[in-house]
Length: 152
Image 1 (tube, rainbow, N blue to C red):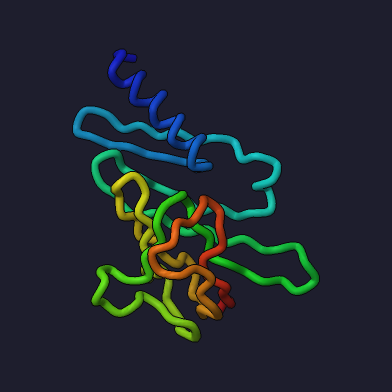
Image 2: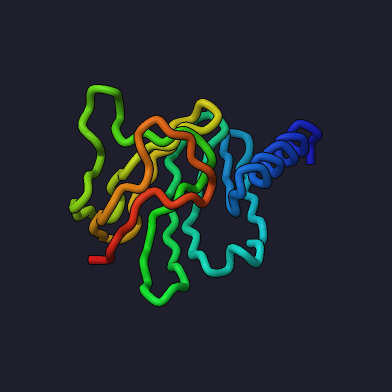
């Protein structure tokens, strides 16, 4: 493996570790790199969808859904990365979703800006947005709950 690709793999792995990302894929015309990390024991409860962040531009990060283990099972959409939460595409635009909305698979529910990359967080199930848990412009952590949801 050439040294430049080896250094890119190492850099990607460090980003994955820092941001608690389990899977990453970067493609160019010369190569395609896929890295998968094992989940930590604390992540075993969580069902994580593929999260893809390209070094050039965001293909879109797919949200993950987790079930809490309390007596009432609630589901949430979590942030796949640490970054700034945006409820809309621009300051004057309406929010992607609001409380009570039902969204289809693939619907963008918010954007998380991480390392100057805008990551669209999309629903991978048809769900009802019960409640937004984060205010616009707030920094969120990887795996932080963004929305309470109900499956439809």
